Image (cartoon, rainbow, N blue to C red):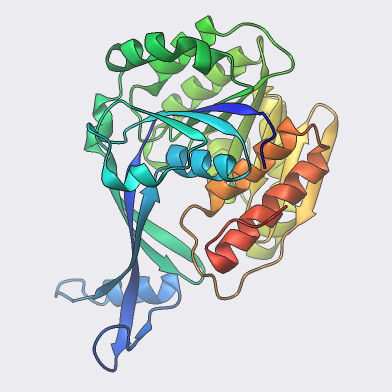
Amino acid sequence: MDYNFSAFVGFDGFIDHIFAAVDRRFGPGDNFRKIGKIQQFAERISHASGKSTNIELFPIDQRIGGNGPILAQTLAFYGVHVQLMGALGNPLKPIFRQLSPQINPISVGNPGITNAIEFEDGKLLFGVTYPLDHITLGNILPYIHENGEKIFDCDVLCFTNWTMLIHLNEILAFFRDQIREDCQKFCFFDLADPEKRSAADIHDILQLIQLYTQKRTTILGLNLKEAEQIATALRGYQPTQNPTVAKKSNIQTLCQYIHSRTKIDEIVIHDTACCAAATSSGLAYVDKFFVEHPKTTTGAGDHFNAGYLLAKLQKKSIHDCLFQAHKISGHFVATGRCCDL
């Protein structure tokens, strides 16, 4: 399939090592029972306080990682032509040679490493991010100038993993000055778990995204945890402690609250149970089917974002954008693969 859509995606890049945590071993290789829930893992660790413990990690997979590369790879699967600028290795690391032929990889540094331990109810990501310190405006300017026409003419500009890209604000300010006003094109932002960034940092990036609204439609994509972090940084919002409410009703309240406070054109929030989007036209909401025994969870959010963006490019309604995003991400979690549309 080839929709003749184009996207720019930047600027991170990781190699993901996926593990299962062993609970009980019965023999060599994969003859073990894994720790199923994050709470069980936490209890195992807490019992080591003042002592020590050993937890075996069993390797499941090694794959292309980073919000940018996974988003790009998923968009490319559905026929979008992608300019991917990121930390892909100099020279290109072998794993990134597996990128779709629909992608033009522009490597600006060496990738980070993510060690991901997957559970039935989520995942723990242990990142080695210092290689991304090299992603500065000065270091990537030559690549931007070389590929500028291909980049700035794209239908959508996607900026991912703000949390780990410490110099991204300067890069975003540069991009904002370069792009032309075009109501038919849009910009997408994925902050990627800003828990370790300060409230002041969060305010700065939200203000920078708001400036983009003067030129293009802007979309901020969040998972539920990220949305609560953003809302708390904005003050005046107290997350509910009731998990059922948080995943059903509260996600809509969060959407509306962040949209009203930031004036970003579209706020999209997803979780394992549901997803919602708030725009100036109103609120859309979709229940998601819960995958009880996921094949994988690392990259699920990026597949959701790709599904949403593809639907936006297809000019679908916000409700249909959410539904398509849910379909693509749900199938990926259940099977580890992209689904047919």
